[in-house]
Image 1 (cartoon, rainbow, N blue to C red):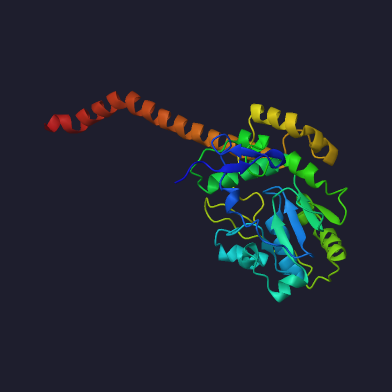
Image 2: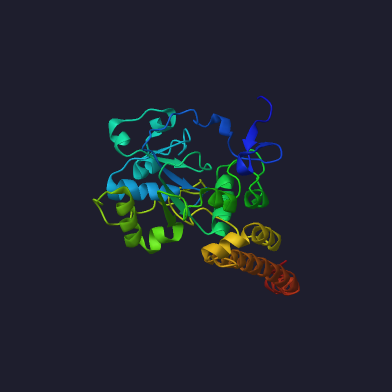
Length: 305
């Protein structure tokens, strides 16, 4: 193995891998591809609903999509089938059908003024989900939730990414919210149809693929086990991203998913405490009744000894 690769940090700066652990080297990404002029970027910070958006585009519009990242889905054929993923796109292999409306996923900062669909998600949920996802991938380097929150990795921070794309002000850009992909599916579908000038062939939401054990999951929002932020992590998040959370109207405190995670952790802790208490009670009972058991044994067998 060669020296630690340089990674993309905030604002496209280069940072050393030893200072910012990250799952893959962006130098391996197919950025040398010459993208079609009519490319529409499917942009988002990681774990914000990009793959589910692609699933909607394929299921409801019959539009296949590619990615700027080779082996983007880690060879998961089931997810590739549900998202209409074209692996060749990352290598510059474009089919005639794809070229009719080139849709390409990216988590990078904007590189041009091409049309784009940008998906944003509550920053707390995105950070926690990315941390949990990388953990499920079984990284060989330690990535802390603080690293994710602070943007000490190749994708930069959540708020920096949003502000770089600025989807509400950027021309020829459709801004979507992750939360609306499911809560207001009908409205989302209409907005996509108008932006892409396409008529949906199906108006039913695609069914997310169920999580499979502890493996990382693309299409089941909330399926990857994620813990709540600690007070220190929450304070860091608020100091770095609170301004954008407020601007976008997201709650300042813990999210519903965080509260669920906290409740689940509390239930597990209570169950563990209950099991431990039962074990202690059993042990105490055993020792307290030992004399009685000896006496009973003597009465029963002692006379015939």
